[in-house]
Amino acid sequence: MNITKRAFLYMFRKRGKSLILLLTLLIISTFVLTGLSILTAAEQSALSLRQSVGGSIKLELDENSPNWTYQQGVGGVLVDYTGAPITDADIEKVMSVKGIRDYNGIGDGSVFAMDFSFIPGINFGQTRDYSRLPSVSNSEYFNYFRRGAFQLVEGRHITPEDDHVVLISTALAKRNGLKLGDTITVQCSYDAGGYPDVSLKIVGIYEVNMDDGQFNTTSTDKRNRLIIDHKAMQEIMQRDSIQYDNGVEFFVDDPKNIDTIAAEIRKLDLDWNCFKLTVDNTAYEAVAPPLTAMQSMVTGLIIGIVIVSIGILALILNMWIKQRTHETGILLSIGVGKTQIVWQYILETLMIAIIAFGLSYFTSGAIAQGTSNLLFAQAAQNQPEIEIELPDDGTEYLDITGQYIPYDTSDMVTPDNVEVHVTPASLLWVTLLGIVICTAAVTLASMPVIKMQPKDILSQMC
Image (cartoon, rainbow, N blue to C red):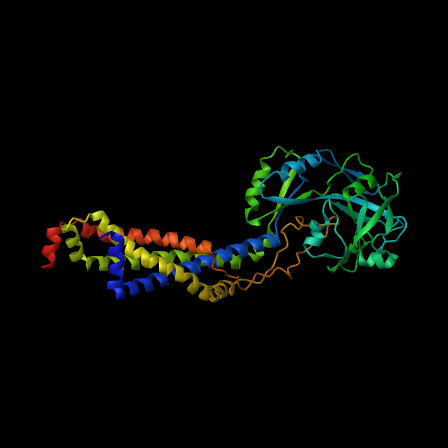
């Protein structure tokens, strides 16, 4: 009689033992599959959260380098930079680093309004009203929009392909009767003079959501902020090439890896005597703790379940195989090899195990979501409310007028649960792990009996 037939006959003959083993394996595999499914869901939710809040690495001119000169002038201190500028070639090098998905270069300028008027502010003299303005590669990634200070309400964002376009505020549009598609004309306000008039097409209108205070000059009032593309800035400032005066922000795929990515950027052949890197991972660090705690809890739970399950399974199988000492002796005495006997015991266990693993797909599906909600609530209940602190020196996140732009945390809410799905892939992992554990447990439990001689086994049963 072959081992497969003997295994089937034994299972049907010992239906009580087979049922107990089936239930034991079903409970074990249900817990393991549930834990694995929750862990997978938590990891996916953590990844989605990290990607939504983002993280950036800013390449900028190092203000502490010896490349800056300061000279007292009539109107104040004149600042001049003599070092290497950030170029498009530098940007291409950084973009080649794995894990970076996009960037936004930021230029700086100052303009008079030629055929429209700015919202007036405090005036400290007879000077003509002007406003500072940034140029951007992609306005969607500009810090005003990323942090919720500005919200685009009409039109579209500026992209790297744009040429001589502008975003204006709702307040400025209302004051001047401007709408999408209209053009405005500006002129560089620098003292050198002789700058040309430059026309800009309005492609987007934004609303200012931040409290800008009551004591603003025309240039510091956020409602006067004109956001333009780099080609327009190049003509306004009469420069030979595009310049990124306020640096370039690079946005990473996963802020969890931001330090590793920053280390790779520092290895690039860039002029580090002139440049520096600033890493901004603040938002992720503020919202991540509940999911991190959840992952740690579930990982520990799975490890504990596996260890306990191996112990219970080994104990049950060891006890049952010892009860089959007489049967083992008879099989050995009639010439059945020890290897065949062990394979029979393994096959019996695996036949039951496969059924149990298949059923666990349905049982774990029934309890996974409820278990996840319970675990996640426990992990999240003691987490502090999301709060992003002001940097110690107040300079890391300043805008071009020197005013701090706070993060808008209203949408940064860590979920109070994760949606769990039991997948065939998770079932496959549990099945493979279960087969290995069952095979090892049966083999180890069989060794003491298999090592005995048939006559010794039979003499013990008399």
